[in-house]
Length: 99
Image (cartoon, rainbow, N blue to C red; front, side, top):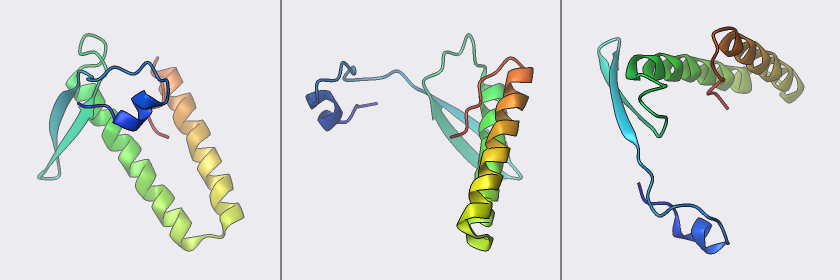
């Protein structure tokens, strides 16, 4: 995958290319693809797919919160969900992949 030229011009030590792998999986009959640079030896495809899907569900929840709540309430809920996701990931020896 080609790294953006502007990022390299700003004194960054980013490589010109990154190795990535495509992970294909199915959710309720719909084909999904995720690109990741995480090593296959540490992150098997089934776990990446599961974690990505869980993160996506959280993001959909954030969208709902943003569209129905006031800003202060949304930020509180967002921080609570992020905290719980981080704790859940840590309890399984993983890092939270959601941002």
